[in-house]
Length: 198
Length: 198
Image (cartoon, rainbow over all chains, first blue to last red; front, side, top):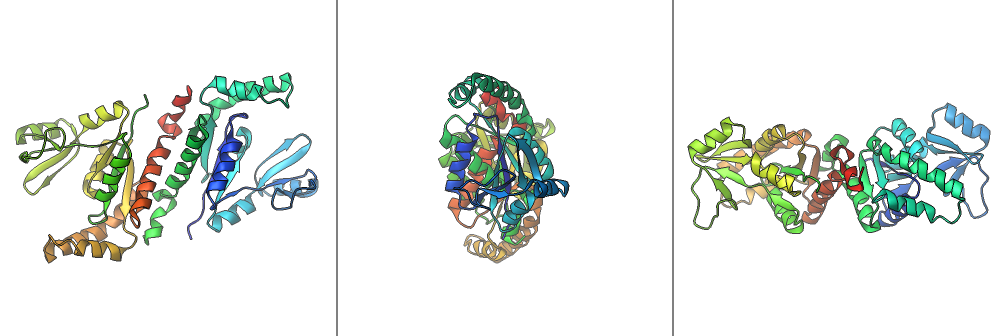
């Protein structure tokens, strides 16, 4: 069986990458979501190896030191990271693996795994991104302002990615990411000709 | 409007690339077939600029000398070639252009137009290719044997292409070429982010 692809989907916050990824996973049984490690406590409705792999600070730090994480970050007092072993295991079983991640994390992950397919989700225009962020009722004006400034800066990072997808209509954006996956599976540089015995 | 893509579809004879391309053009109004120049005479049912651009030997040779052809070949006493001007004109109008061509011609065309997307059509296995070639009732056993030998050699040329598509089921092969086109339109190296004003 051919090896799967790691696809990194990123973009500024508020661009709707989560919605695209949710839809992708529903449509493609061959696509598995990458599962993160975290040092935060397991919540009652969560399962080990489904929502996260739960680690102590000590275990997590050891994974960082030993290069077992594709990327890692400290968020609101807890550590989060993408374990390489889980990703590689899925890829070897022939699954494609989806890593939906913020811009900073994705840059680290693509350095750790240069064979990844990298996709940046763009808003149709800057105004729409602004609107989406402002409509997040859960955040203070200061948080929104900070997110907006970050999002503006993050847009320029598109050049670090192989592909970009414009999230104007969800259906089109999902179609484009699926096309990218299907096309990458046809790449001669990835050995696609092997399926014909060559 | 964004510039179109030149897609070169090639593969050994008998692999079914013509059928795939016919289907592609029917499905994608934005995809135009490249029109060749030829020195052979116009047939009654043919139209200038639809089936071919008809040229005298002198005109054709001048086009070759002036580098106006992406590739050219001498077949059964006549010259055939792909005029760069027509392709570039269509690309600038925003159309994708499809060049379905034999292996030798495609290698020349990809050198003349390095931005082309290149796709090699493969048989599901060597036996099927053999069968398809042997079932061509119009050819002598010698012609078939020659084609088979060529086809075997041509299979190794897959490494010169960016993508390969296995023509097992027509529907899957057409889907894959469409995915390749859609994915290439999302490439940041082709300026896809421009559509979001970046």
